[in-house]
Length: 417
Ligand SMILES: NC(=O)c1ccc[n+]([C@@H]2O[C@H](COP(=O)([O-])OP(=O)(O)OC[C@H]3O[C@@H](n4cnc5c(N)ncnc54)[C@H](OP(=O)(O)O)[C@@H]3O)[C@@H](O)[C@H]2O)c1
Image (spheres, rainbow, N blue to C red):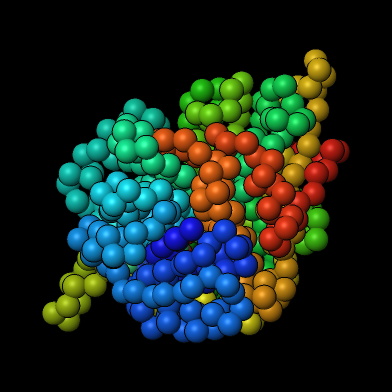
């Protein structure tokens, strides 16, 4: 099966390692903006895999560039592990060239000052009640196009969204008649030794965590100021950490796809040093996305900051400790209340030894491969646009165990108040 992978950053590096371990992928083309990164990875992995590896340069913001590559390579499926900014262009190219589409993050506009985008965004803020720059409406709008083309688009197969959504489908299938509350807890107990760095693309990461928080309750969104809700939790394998409520994209799809759900919240852990730096950068305007004039040049503050911060890809060798990401569910089974916690613990240094990246890339790249393999094998099939929780979770859960992200079910978890 021919697979085109777009992007060659931290997440892509892991996804490509894992695709090379899965014999379903017989030909893999690695395409990105900087082809030298693709060449280096292909040279490293070629001796380890039976897949035929090729590389290409592509500008994923350009439909022409994408369709030229896809027409030449003729992929069965395209895995988009570039940036959320490119989701729609890559979906359009898949439709034009008859390829299935898979990604790990929903569409986000790069230019949030574009008046056409802003008009749609402001209408959505009013109608839906949350102000994040990213949401599923843009990609769900492709439903009829993918249906008509007889193609599958699988959205959000990273860890969160992705594994957390599959955990939800698995809990519903095997442990509950109705799920009422979902708390998604994302803990990174890793230490890279820098005063401040982000674990994945700084621009995407900082835009996410500096935005308002929100959660779903009784059929509507409740929005909070950034980092306004804080809890402490004692994570298996990591220990006690402060965690903060964030808006997160899987809340939107789980609210749509999980019947009877009453509340969905997402918490992420942050250390005091990270928060202090982020607040300071926010206060001085360094997280701004609007270009500013500086000595005759236009610069976008957050892009300039990205150039100054450590490249997330360089953190792998220095990061020690573990991540623990999972979901606590409460609901009803056979008329009785119950709660369970499904989670994975991942060790940064083990990830580094296997793939040269830290656990945040690893925990995203492994599920990116799994979702792609399920679409490629036809185990997950259907014409249209789907979120991962809409499919049978069992084969995905088996592959998590087989490909490096084993999970645990705790039937007596401590709940978050
Ligand atoms: N669901 C989850 O759990 C989860 C978690 C973390 C991240 N993610 C998502 O994973 C994706 C990748 O994140 P990452 O940390 O790997 O980012 P990254 O390290 O910055 O890598 C992005 C890659 O995309 C390439 N790229 C960017 N713009 C491009 C364009 N116009 N044309 C072609 N290639 C382009 C970059 O090329 P260069 O090498 O030239 O810069 C780079 O190789 C993002 O969408 C992120 O939101 C999902």
